[in-house]
Figure: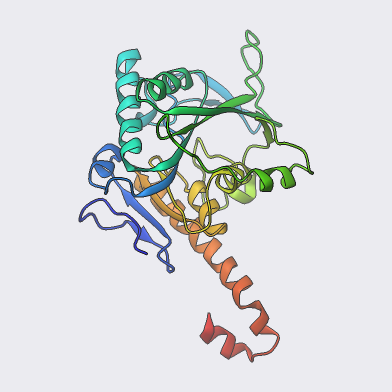
Length: 285
């Protein structure tokens, strides 16, 4: 089945299996061109609008919090309008029982919640991602920021959302999984091809995708970044459409996906390796 595409826009990158595709451009314009009700789930890690000239600690060093022009605040009214516009477009693209997951800190997550309510979404959970290795607070004037919130919401009030309850309970040792999740920030092994300033841990996205989608479902990320959502999606048999403004992150995503695809080939054809000559295995792969 062909993945939904924004009009005649050509992919910036398409995986060999055609289950992972990236488009470069402004997400609002790209989503306007995509067919209605064509995706099953959305994960979005939008700009937090916290690039204000401040500093933070990274790997023991003092660094700027500025991430790029895309993260500069537009003021309350501008931030609110942008948030409502991109969420409304996601709502149009979601199938009737589809859901959206949106991550954020206090800089943006309250605006997100308000927009979801205003647009008629059904808020299902607010997940707390408790970071096990948060950076220290350099000013010593606040508690150390150690969490992010992820809001999970259904497309509308009538949504009969997917929730793979049994899988989550099994993953949690036979107990109901709570809305507090503990994951480390992405390690070096997830950044071998380069760094994205707001990259999420792969394990976090894997849990989200396993919880609220089924194999074969289409997952959309309008702020694809380093495509962690896409890597998690194809790793678990889902299909992925990522939208990304910056060319450098398209290239980073391409490298990450090619590595994941190579790993999948190794798993897929490993049974043949023990039985076939090396050159025959290479021909198969």
